[in-house]
Amino acid sequence: MRSKLLLKIMLCLTALFLITNLTTPHVSIVHAASHDSVDDCLKNQDTCKDDTLAPVSDDDSGTAVGLSAWDYIKMMLALGFVVVLLYGVLKLVNSRNSKYQQNQLMQNLGGISLGQQKSVQLLKVGQALYIVGVGENVNMLKEVTDQNEKERLLELYNERQERSSQMPYILELLNKKKGRKNNDQKDLANLDFKGELEEQLQEMKEHRNQQLEEWKQKESRKNE
Image (tube, rainbow, N blue to C red; front, top):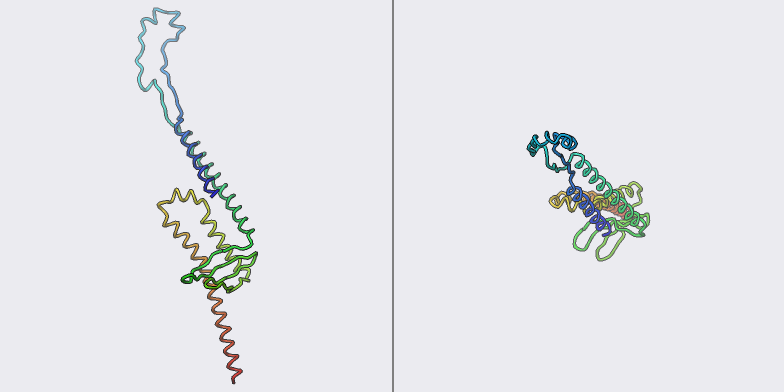
């Protein structure tokens, strides 16, 4: 909420700055050059009486109002500076949010639905990762102990968080007509994360089947 409010304020200031520059154009005034100076007329009044004023054309007099190329360059530089400033503020806010989340004791990193009111969730408790089954009861299915798997899961989670939180308000304003494209990108990130969980579940299933087969073999040997 604070980041969105800050973005709105920055965008309003940017719009005000650009409007001020656009409504204050560079003005250049061109005066028609006179043939005789005032001193010459005072010294030679007869000659000044005989002279007739030349008609002033539209090309030689008047005011020429318009934006110069340098004005456009200044506006583009100012706009670029504001965009960079917005990006820096957002990165700072996101880094603070990520630090706050890292300091939390328990954190839900995501999950997949397995049916009605049943899902598998990945929880981070301290520095440990647990795969938990949620249904009528909550059961711990597996603890992720492999360091490489931990790093890969956390990296996927951080990438998904960065994509979803990076400049959300500006993207909402600029990409309203491209909502499907943004949704597709989020779906791809979710698919990657779900794929990791499904891979973990498949490994657990194979491990249990292997243990079951070993137990059956032991029982058959005992009966023999």
